[in-house]
Length: 385
Image 1 (cartoon, rainbow, N blue to C red):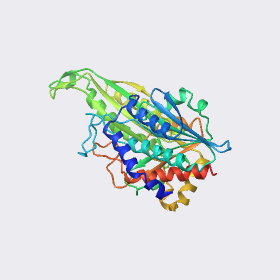
Image 2: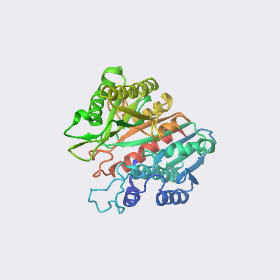
Image 3: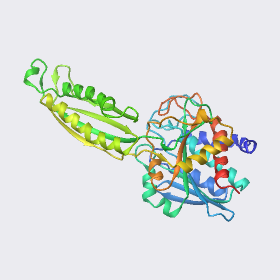
Image 4: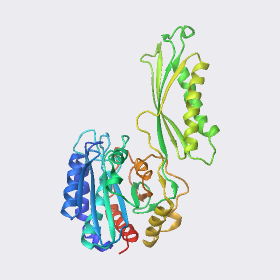
C-alpha cells in the first residue's frame, strides 16, 4: 500500500500547496470545493455539491455489502496573515491555512485516488469535504442540510494533524476527545470620573480585575480535579486615558468542558460569580452566556474508536503512544456529526511543526503519504473486501 501511495506523493504535494496558496475563509471555499469536486469526478466518484453552500460529498460503491462509512475533511482557512516566507505561502493577505485544513483535504483526495485505483473494499464510502470548521460550524450546517439523510452512514471518522507528535502517529480515546466551547460576553458597568477623584466614581476597571482573578478559582475550587475544564479571559477592553475612569469594561471569556454536568455547572456558576464580584465593588455585570455558535464535545463511539485503534495496531503503532489519558482541550465542530452518527475523531502527528493557528505554521508534507496510507488502511479494515 505504501509504495502505491508514495508514487503519488508529488501529486499530493502539488494539490496541498495549491490549496495553501489560495486560502478561503468559512463558507467562501468556492475555489477549493471546485478543485475537490473536479478531482473526485475525475476519479469516478459520484459528486454532490452545494451542501451547506460550499460543502462537497464524493461517493463510491463497490461490491454487495450494505456497510457504509463516511470520512470528513475540513476545507476552510483562518483570518491570519502568513509569516512563513515559503514560496507557496498564501497569496491572499490576511488569510492562511494556519490549521492544516489544506493537508486534511489533500489526504482525503489522496485516499479517493487510492480507492479508485485499487477498488479494495466492499461497501459504500462517502468522503465529506466540509466548509467552515473554524468558529461558525459548517458541520452543523451540513447536518441541518440533511447530510446523513442523503448519505446515511454506519460510522463517521475525522482526523486532525497534531504538531509535536511524530509524523503519522495516531492518538485517540473513546468518550470525550475534544472539549465543548462556550463564549461569554460581559459588560461591567460603573460610573466614570476623573482619575484625581476616584472616590466619586464607581470604577469598572477595578471590578473587572477582581472578576478576572476570581474566575481563576472556578476550575480549581468548583470542578472535580479529575474533570478537565478551562476558563480563559481572552479579551478585556475599557477606557482610553490614563487619567480617566471609564464607565464600563468589556470581557470576552472562553469556557471549555468535556461533560454535560460540568458544562451546566459552569453555565450557572460563572454568571453568578461575575455579578457578585461586580456588585461587591458597587458596579453591575451584564452577562451574555453562549454567544454565537457553541460547540459540544466530540464524544467518540467505543466501537468506532476500536476500529481506528485496530487499524493503527496493524500499521505497527505502539499502544503506549496511541492511547490518550485525557482529551484535547480544543473544540471541534465534528462533534455535531458525532451527535448524529457514531464515529471517531483522532489525531495524526504532524512532526516538529509550529503550533496550530500560528502565523508561522505549515502542514508537514511528509504526513500526506503516511496520513493517506492510514486512511486507506482504515477503510480497507472496516469495509474488508
